[in-house]
Length: 314
Image (spheres, rainbow, N blue to C red):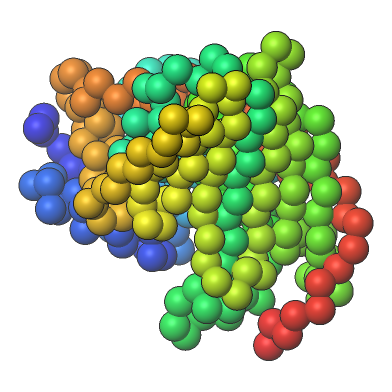
C-alpha cells in the first residue's frame, strides 16, 4: 500500500463496515462522521490517499467533486443519484478519477452471480429478479421514519435495493426501461414501498425486477428462462440451479456476505495503488457504470404510484 490513509466519510452502519474491512486489510483508516466533515479543512489535507463515501445519497455530488479536485480515487456507495440530471453531473465531476474509483455494487462479487455471468445466456428470452423483506425488522433500535429511506427525495425501496437493477444490466447490458409501477404509503408521500420495474433489450430478453419493503419472509431470487435451460439463483441459500430437459444441476456456495465487501475493497485498493485488480469481469469501476446509474435514476423518476399499502410503521 502507498503512503496516506483511506478516509471513510459517513459513520453509519455501512461506513463502519467499510472502515472495519479496511483495517482488516491492514490499511491506515479514518472514520469521519458526516457532521464532522468540513470541506475547506478536508481540501487542505495532505495525508489522504483515497476516500470511501458512505453518506446519504443527496451528498454524493459534493463529495465526489471534492475528491476529483484533490485527485483522490473514491469508493462511492450506491445509489449515486435519483434523477438523470444528477447522474450526469456526478459522472462529469468524477471524470478525472473515474478509472481509479468504484461504485459500491458489491453484489457483482457474489459467486453465484459471477458463475451465472460466465454461462452462455444468448438464448435467454425472459427473466425475473425479486428481493423483499419486512423493513421494520431491518435492525434493532431503528425506525423507518428516521432513516434515509423515508425521504421523498432519494428514498424508497427502488433506490435502497437497486442492486437487482444493476445486476440485470450486468447480465444483459442492452436493457432499457419500459415502465415502473409502485405502491406507496399514506404516511410517506413519494416513497415507494414496492416497485415493479419492466425492462427489455432491443434484441434480447424481457424481464421484471421487483423489490419491496413488505415481504414477511426475506427473499432474493433470480430466474432466467432460455430456449435450452432455465437458471434459478437463490442469493440467500446461496445456490445456482441449471435446469434442462435432461435434468438439473445445483451448485451451493460457502461464503459469508462480508466476503463481497472485502473483495470489492481489495479491487478498489488495487486501483488506488495502480496494481492489477482481481480480474472480476463485473468490476464496478466508476467509468464503466454510467448506464447502471442512468437506468436506476430513470426507473426512480418513472415510478407510477398505482396504490398504497396499509402497514403500521410506528
